[in-house]
Image 1 (tube, one colour):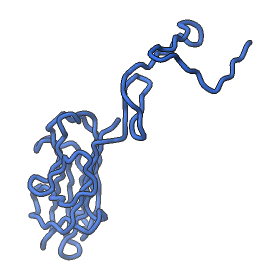
Image 2 (image 1 turned 60 degrees about the vertical axis):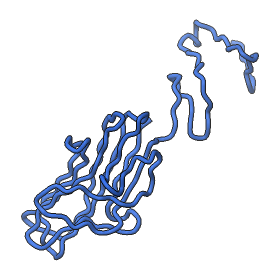
Image 3 (image 1 turned 90 degrees about the vertical axis):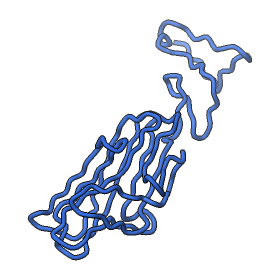
Image 4 (image 1 turned 60 degrees about the horizontal axis):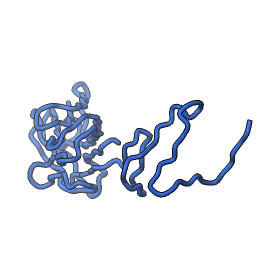
Length: 200
């Protein structure tokens, strides 16, 4: 068997390299799409350009948000860590909206710390990621009814297909024996945070 060893195969300007159509080369498909590769963009084997997991966002609650027990309440994440497509509304609706050209599959995560005003008051906690104000994408349910606690920090994660103008929000629910309950906020994103990114 002959062996050819080279460092590089070149081609004439404006022409493609013709590969054999039989033998070990028979399954080879020529990549001929237009575009420019960069540090964050590459050409996949299916002849499509791909890049980093964007759009992406991560937001957090900077101060405690007290809410009424026994009802779902939207979490008002007010501080942005990351928002590559400026899709997060952190002042009015507290939601992430998919841009006009950004539809596709996304991964979302929600981590929320609840704290009651005294020990042994938190009986039940639920956390939801909702789509377009109604459809629930994912729910995390924690029950302490037989042994109430003061604080919990569960999380929930979901992958779903979104179209342009779809939006997602985080919600919380709690049952307490008495006193008050709040979503805990803190500087940075150590207590309660919400984020997501498009899958490539």
